[in-house]
Image 1 (cartoon, rainbow, N blue to C red):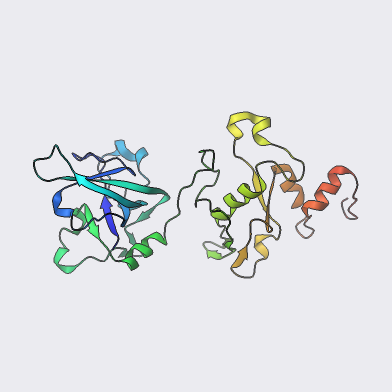
Image 2 (image 1 turned 120 degrees about the horizontal axis):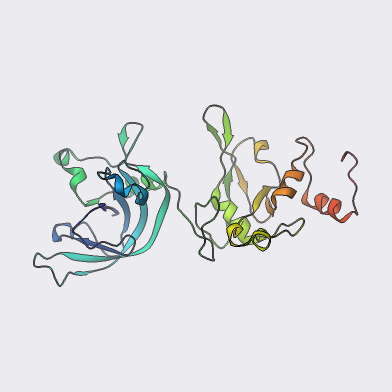
Length: 270
């Protein structure tokens, strides 16, 4: 069974986020080696910690796995340590309550003190429900954060993009995981003119590039499988703008390369 572990802004416990969890023996039955856990913070009480949190309100901020559990040799009360492995922080806070309902169901017998428990056992369905609202924060292979980072790299992925999302109109949901995979496959150099942002602008522009959808995402009628190897390509800002210059006349990357090389003339270019 998974669990939730709470971490306070100020604590007497020797916690280290994503590396070590220090807890009293009463929670030993809740935590076991190899189990998945969600990290949780309660309501912020001191504004001095605002820059160290994803939200001032109660929220979940990461997921991990419990490694080795062992005794705190300096404790006279039987306190324990748990090594934390595979910690993945969230890009955004996942609130503990959505649409007026807590993501963790509160047992009636614990109604008055449930949120005071620093380790809480939950079932797999609750764990999955909370994770479904999360976007994982990711680093590129060189350790730098992506421009619009979210999910982690995999060896090769396809995914869904183009889901219509209601707000004050319609926007099209993009999957950041696919953007990162496209960069991994196609590189950070423009695939039309070979412009390199880092080479031109230095460290400030390291990791920056536009990712172009071969088929405009706005043309998707519904959720659609997108393969970053064939359906996406990396372009510099100039080439990306030129590709989309005429809304009803999208250029292919090959056509753009032809224009740049002077070997191809597009009839309606002027």
